[in-house]
Length: 178
Image (cartoon, rainbow, N blue to C red):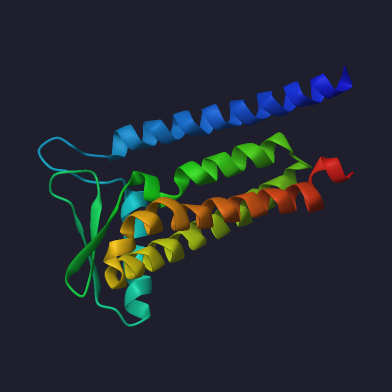
C-alpha cells in the first residue's frame, strides 16, 4: 500500500507541476507571439536565437538572424547561407518545464530543490544554445545530413543532458537517498 501511495504522490506532484508550468507558458506564448499583420516570436525564442548567433560569431563565423516574414521562427544564417530556423520548440522552455516537474516530484527540501532547479535549468539552457550553434554549423558544413542531425543526434544531446541531471538528482539529492 505504501508503494502505491508513493507512486500516486509522485504522479500528482509531477503532473500538477507540469500542468501549472505548461499553462503559464501557454499563456506567455499567447500574449507574446504575433501572427496578425506580421510575425514575431516570443522574447525568449528571440533571445535564444541571438545568443546562438553570438556564439557562432564568437567562434569565427559570420552569423546573422532575422525574424521569418511568414512564420513564427527566426532565420539563422551562416556566411549569408540560410541554415536553420529557431522556433518556439528550440528555446528549451518545454524541456526545462519537464525537468522542473520531475525534480519537484522528487523534492528534497525547498532550498536544495530550488537551487537544483535553478542550476539544472541554466545548464539545460546553456547546452541548448551550444546545441543550436553546433547544429547550425553541422548543417552549414554537411547539409546532406540535416535530417539525421536535427531529428536524432541533436535531440539526443538535450534529452540526454536532462536525463543525466535527473539521474544525478535521484542519486545525490532526492529524498530517495535519505
